[in-house]
Image (cartoon, rainbow, N blue to C red):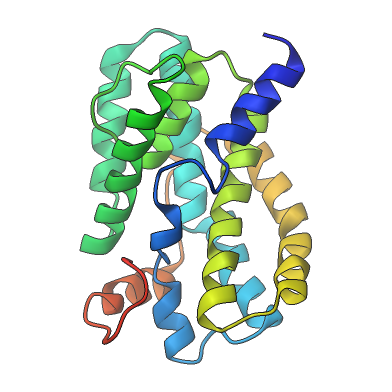
Amino acid sequence: MPTEARLLRLLTWLSPAFPVGSFGFSHGLETAIREGAVSDVRSLTGWIAPLLERGSAWTDAVLVKAAWTAVTAEDHVALDEIAELGEALAPSLERHRETMAQGEAFLKAVAAWNPPPLIRAPYPVALGAAAGAACLPLQPALTAWLHAFASNLVSVAVRAVPLGQSDALQVLAGLEPVILRTAVRAAAATLDDLGSASLVSDIAAMRHETLDGRLFGS
């Protein structure tokens, strides 16, 4: 597949228009906004960057890499085990619902191309498997995945803070080096590198389950 076609595939699969329902989940950020922990460019950047480097986005990136590797090696047993592990790593009910609902929606939508050998999987495992099945290069897939993660949280802040568009773009610009560094690390990672240190975000996701008047599903 030509380089341009691979790029186009990634842009399509990780576009906000791809029907996985990402816009409906805040990953606990709505709680942080409601409680005043995130209210501007500085605090939003400070919330997302650690998730990318050592939080849930890092864990997801490792799972993307592991699923991509399993598919390219045609190891379906390992792929099923990675899917089970990814599901077990969800630290709360809403995080579990978030990753599994999006994974299911992604697998259904990606069937228009070359569907990976999965029936049910967390979102990062589904994306990694699909990228491997389509012979898409790993590091660009990781970069696109991490950018989509960050972009969705910035979109949440635009709606819930509310944050202006110029401020939102400033956050995304500031996160570019973090996204690129994390993609490089994840491309060299194994499942032994799984682990996160973003307890405040995880607790915010748990507290979201009882938040009154919620706008988002997580």
